[in-house]
Length: 284
Image (cartoon, rainbow, N blue to C red; front, side, top):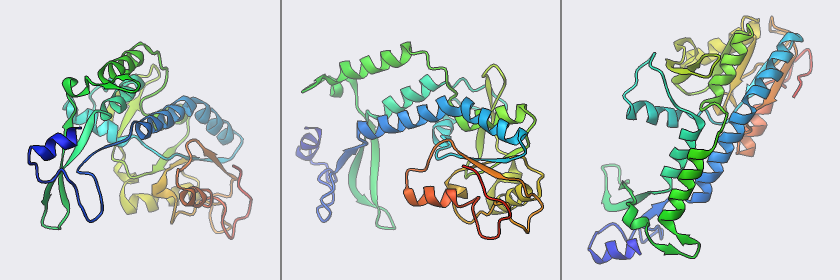
């Protein structure tokens, strides 16, 4: 209905790209948003158990390699920008806030302006649906009432889970005495205390970029690191198996905390610790 109104109002881009049949007004489906929220919640709820397993493996003389899929950096970056935070500031971001942010995304739409930039890409803009626009009856009920009901349920829920599970994993393992690094693409992180309070931190420069990735690989293979966190950034081009050429001959123990959604990436991840020339088989 909104699209019809915008076309009638003469907005040029609302009809979309006729050649591809794209709609000029689109939104992320609620099922996709909910799927992401559940995926992140499961990761957060498993963080302590995964940390326990990693610490136990380390104490047995193994090298824990923890595989994750999403670092949640985009949501953290949004929060930092909105609140004008700097490194060292307290970050009051709980998992209920994460759920509220996912719910909020369901009211944002993308409008095709009908214009193109210098590279011939569509120029779009984001618009937030107002209460008046949501105050319509659907087959399931009033849309605004359903949105408010979901927000109220989130507010009343006691979700005891970290907003940044990857950083909680780091905290738990480092507290146990482990030397930990990660191969991901993120730059910001949360630094937790034992009571769950977090401050904004910058990921160590020594871990970032191509050089940081190579240095992290070297350190895990020479034994100067006790464990490693990997996401898709480390799913290819990384060899951290117990190679006969490496100083560190300990058993590699991969813990799949959050599996990649792409089966090719998932299989590539498994192969980081199971490679030709290894002197001892890995554990999963």
